[in-house]
Length: 210
Ligand code: CO
Image 1 (tube, rainbow, N blue to C red):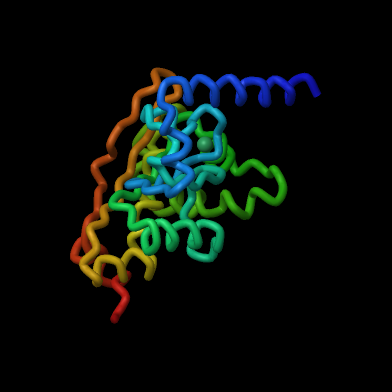
Image 2 (cartoon, rainbow, N blue to C red):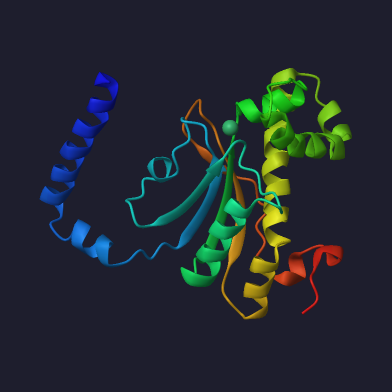
C-alpha cells in the first residue's frame, strides 16, 4: 500500500511544481489536446514515450503493447490509429521498438508463456520471413538485435497497409510513418530509415483500391 501512496504523493508534488513553472499549463491542456505525433511503442517499463523524447503531456498520442506490434485485427490499436489520424490529425506516426525486448526474445526462443504466445506469434512470422538475414549473424545478441529491428520495420509496413493511413494519403493529408529503435543501455534512439510518406511507397499488392 505504501508503494501506491508514494505514487499519489509524487503526483501531487509534480502537479504543484508544473503549476508553479507555468500557471497556464493545466488550463491550456484541459481545453484540448493537439498532439503532432502518434507513438506506437513497447509496454516495457524502461521505454516511456514522453520521457525519452523529452516531451511534455499534450504532445504525443501513445499506444503501447507487448513488442510494439501492429496487428490488423487489434481493435484497440486500430481505434487509436483511426482517432489519431482522422480526429487529432497527427502528422507523424512513430513505431518504436527497443533492443533487449523480452517479447522479441521469447519469440526467438519459442518459449511458452501462455496466452501471450499467440500475440508473439506475429514476431515469429517476421523471424521466419527474414531467417536468412538473421542466420547470417552468429552471435545471439546480434540476432536478437536484428530481429528487434526487423520487427519494427514490419510494423511500419503494417501501419502503411491499413485503410486508415491509406485513406488519409488519398485525401491529401500530410502523414508519415517512421521506424525507430531505442537502446535501453544508453538511452539513444536510432532511426531505422524506413520512413513512408505516401501511397506510392507502399508495396502494390497492399495498396487498397478506392
Ligand atoms: Co519490449
